[in-house]
Length: 176
Image (cartoon, rainbow, N blue to C red; front, side):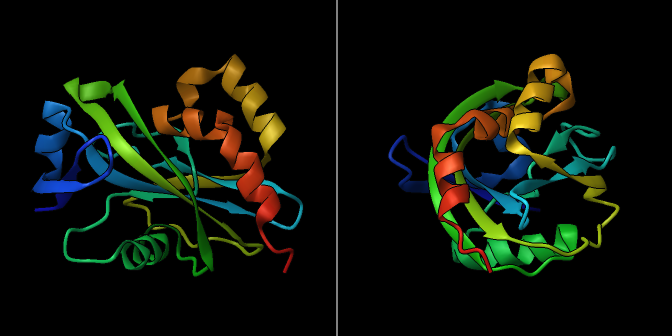
């Protein structure tokens, strides 16, 4: 069973819980989101597999998951990026934010989401259990599409794409 790290409003660990139970109870827990950007400044989006326990078939950031209690955050983030998208990339922590959103299946996302950014110009190798599709999109085109079709995107990705820190984080990435 996958465990998540329960946290307080200051992101201090206060315990662990089975992942599905934490989402059923809407308890605040630690998560992460990876946003990869290519040399053109486009974001790599992932379409979640239809078989995911929530938000299946929705477009989201490159990779997202939960830190395992027994792993350091950078280890989990790198491992999940390879597991979901077949990508190895140098990542930098950008910012974190707390959000709460009702999901399908009577689940609630209540997460302290740690956002990591990195450069990538290759082609992902999708794990079909995690991702159904991928595409590159500029931030401005993404934000416009989210305005027209908000139901096509995950709750957390809509917040990331409109967070003031994402543009700064993208601009701070080295070109190479």
